[in-house]
Amino acid sequence: MSRPRLSRLPSRANAGRDRGGKRGEHIHHGYWPTPESKAAESKETAQVNLINLLLARSQLPDGARVLDVGCGVGGTTRHLASALGCAVTGLTISGRQVELATRLTKTAAAAAAAKEAGGAVAAPDADGFFALGRGRVRFVELDAEKMGDFFGGAAAADRLFDAVWISEALSHFPNKALFFANAARLLRPGGRLVLADWFRAEGLRDEEMAADIKPIEGRFP
Figure 1: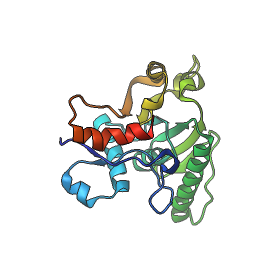
Figure 2: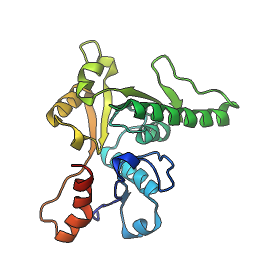
Figure 3: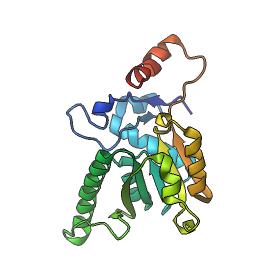
Figure 4: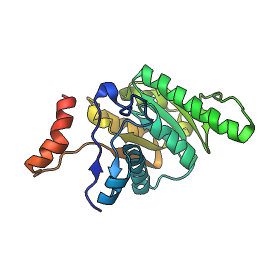
């Protein structure tokens, strides 16, 4: 496989917005598998490409119960639900992101329901999940360091996850070892940890450092 080409991240203040100021579905990088795709595909398509790359690598089964850690405004959460029929809990420390993610999900769910049921109103179930495509989605405001206690416990065997998904969030966690311990605690036997993050390769050329590393280090001290 050729070396992935990643889209540049916008600043934190503008993350998730396009150049016109419209809020997008995803905050994470994009993936172009070939030079031809880089030339032809938009940033938004490349961001979905990255999700699909992780799905291909992880072989996440349809209908899986997924915890999306650091979910942002829920683009990946909704994609996993609508495309794979997963029951996905999106987790973020930001109450504002929960509001935005829920609003975007209600809009998507209402649009889907209108097509299938002639205008039915989208509403959450008793567990807070919105039906979306073949799956379900909900969002929880929580510090990820507390997710083991929040979702775990001796009586929670039936609430364990088939996958813990985390994309470009772990690098911001102060206690990375605690995240891995919590993920292991919350995964069913044979469950999957699906992780994408920034790793700086050894031996980068000066031009690669200037193009790919310095912009990130400058924006995220």
